[in-house]
Structures are given as C-alpha cells and as structure tokens.
Length: 108
Image (cartoon, rainbow, N blue to C red; front, side, top):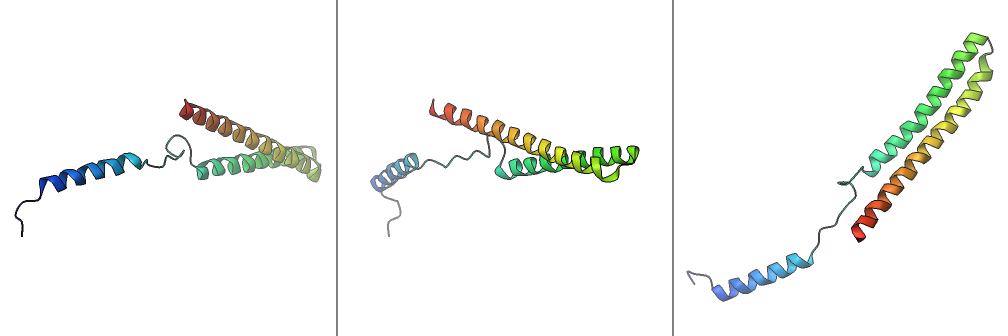
C-alpha cells in the first residue's frame, strides 16, 4: 500500500477533469431570463376569463337598468370574449418579440 498518491497520476487526472468540464456546457433555459411557460399560460388564461367576466358584468348591468335581460348580456359577453382573445394574442406577440430579441442577443 502506498502512503502517498502518485503526483503524475493526480496531475493527469486533474487535466482530464478540466478538459471534460470545459466541454460540458450547462443547458440554458429561458426561465431565468423571463417568465416560465406556466406563468405565460396562466396570464393568457386570466386575460381571457377577465375579458369575458367584464363583458358579462357590463351586459347584465345594462340589461337590469334597461329591463331587457338577455339582449345586452349576450352581446357584451361576446364582446368581452373577443376583447379577451385580442388581449391574449397581444401578449403572445409581446412574448414572441422578447424571445426573438433574446435569441438575437445570444447570437451576437
């Protein structure tokens, strides 16, 4: 049994370890830079639901005030749904533009 390790073998091991560590590059994710995919999906879903709820509220309020219960409720529900989709698509375009800028910055 050797009481001291062989210095040549230790140096060779250190150089091999250094070479392996230099080759392996950790995988980069977009989560640290911005929002995770779950957060983006949650925001888009909330935008859609809030648009619909606002449309329902305005439509119901107008129907109660004017005494025409189903008419404005249906109209403003559809308008709220359309507004929610429009807002959701705007957010998607915003995230896409941010992702393109980040990819462009990485290339540079």
